[in-house]
Image 1 (cartoon, helix red, strand yellow):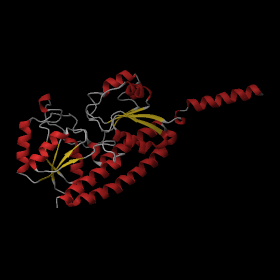
Image 2: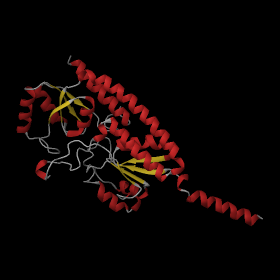
Image 3: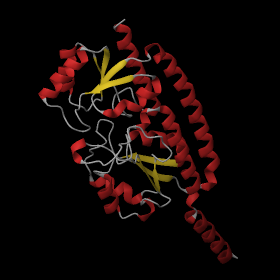
Image 4: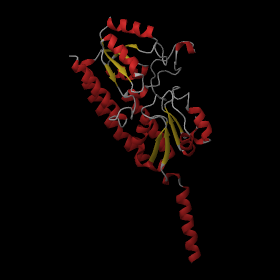
Length: 306
């Protein structure tokens, strides 16, 4: 009798331990914005680690041993794709020795799937064109509607991997959808008076944001993507800016401030530092908060100029 009970208990414990839905999904996201969306969809069913810091340029991330450990244990890897992480992610994945997260397997998510990419180059691409991405501009998450597409992709994969809790992921997705749609209307209303405003950006980071909310990017401080400007280029840029009605210069926090300030002083155009992802500014703690900060700073500068 006691032996039968003992065997029954062991069988029950074995079933619990072997059931994949009993444990949370271990998720590694390459960037904090992807990590933030994964947390929104996964809730308490996932643990999320983001590789890149909010203060880093996601094109250039310093690999650390801890990254390999997290990838080795991960059930899911979410990457931005579109060659955003091509310079640093492949060696980390290779050294992690985790087949589940390899491209093409269930544990791998390319978040760029389903996104209408901007700035897709036409014709051959070579290094003389700068850091051009063959698949298009990888900063698509700065359009909140693209953030919703990514959330849908993540929810579908979480549901596939953890089917017992698919309803939870779907409910979290619908809650996130409601927040994004409500906030997008709010952001659009706040920025609508400035539709058509011309701006200069440091890098092509804010192209998706500009298209979504009606701004025109007239020029960039970089002469080519990923190439720092020479003094000659800066002088020419300042001259071009003086001939046009440029309202603002947009710069991410990690870009060289002295260069941007030189352009701002020479052109008489205000410089605005805008977060590009969670953690890039102290008050930009999650994906939605990033847009709250961007919109608030733009509105403040525009009203000061009125």
